[in-house]
Length: 264
Image 1 (cartoon, rainbow, N blue to C red):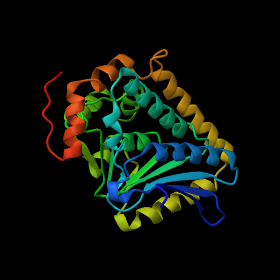
Image 2: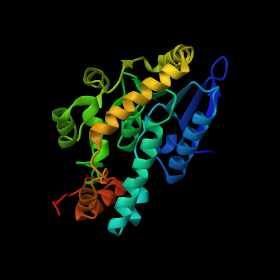
Image 3: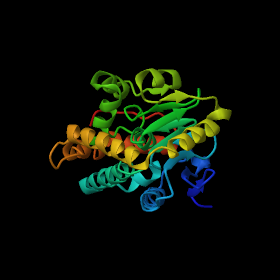
Image 4: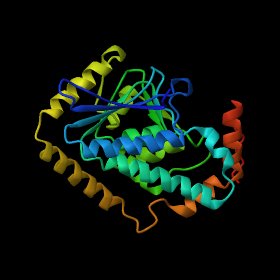
């Protein structure tokens, strides 16, 4: 069974859908899934018949629950952390730069990398049960890149970004709507139908207007987050990922026990 499904839907094949397909693992992303997502982005950009891309998770528990944590057990060197964040930023940027509108249909949780993928989608819709956030301060003890922090700030502002990260909270649907993290909330049984209706509506509009609008906003946001060559904040990435706390966080997560952080 493929971990990432890609197909065309809609009355005229104008809507493409990516389904993160590991429901048994709450759709946690493997390296193969990241690679398949990049390939899907390339297909969408090449195919002029595709007007809108929808992202969704299989099952009702999660959109994406982050990167598969077991993949972090091999981290030993500074370069492991930097390469992971560089690779992740490349994938997030690729999704962000897809020429067509991208809609995230969030059922269940969108956590960590899953929340980042939702953030760079153009529109986000969820169910009343959905929760979104980056709870790494109480789970793994790692960090987000400077670029991802910038995207969260674009969505909710600096103070709320710090509160979200400091308190390691998962934001519920109503709060996410108030903060601007999602555009609208639909009942679970209606999410798929409503999102596809919105996608069909968008697909009827002038493609170049949609593309230019999206690219104009992307350029403005990219300019605001420009920090020279260090879009990752490599010194910060190394400090967090090479810490004893991160190793403890990964071990505790895999053992399904609370972590014991010591600040070193």
